[in-house]
Length: 278
Ligand SMILES: [Zn+2]
Image (cartoon, rainbow, N blue to C red):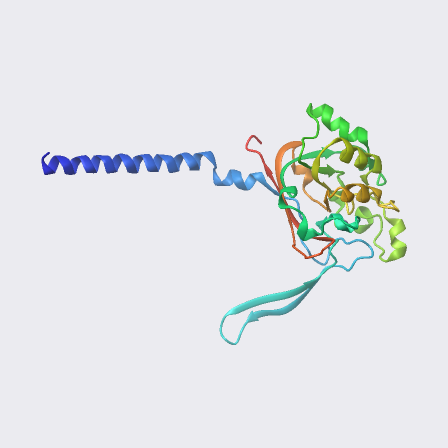
């Protein structure tokens, strides 16, 4: 083989390789356009601020500035301390919150907090009745409409529509008073004890979430839905937002709470990722 021919062959092969590689990169970019990924992620968490809604007896969020500004060494520096009850704003209830031998927040397996999810929208009923309790029929109505049972291993999100009142405490909680006496003035929808029982006995869900301050409705005295769900190590996400932006199915959830050792709950960053078809 003449050297010039051999050299030409190498150049041709190299060009072909580069072209293929470029095409492969183009293919990947075509499959996942950047803007589409951004549009498919939906933030279901509220910010923590002075306005964050807490249970009427819980310590509210507090942010103290440690330092903010230029240092005498010539660089900018900002740092804060924060303090807060575990249960306030968008947060998780760990099973130990209402079940003595339940998991604490750091013990919840991550696979319970990530994966396929569904949304059950009862806002047409709940927005007219701040004492509304989501019933077994509401759960069954979703199954009839979607022509499937609630899939095994789902994260179930309940949309009451109450997020639209947040952070107006009178509308969202039923009262802007605080302390023990304010507990009886709480009015917001939740999941009925019967529906919670039906879910744990007849379906196999990984976690549950709601766009109100509690999985039990505001007038609950004994928090029975909490007891039923958390006793089965099914964690609950509370004070969710943006559920109106989700379809009834066809999305996944990533819900990562602060990993507090022994914690009964924790602040929660939760996002939904819509499937490609949406
Ligand atoms: Zn809670």
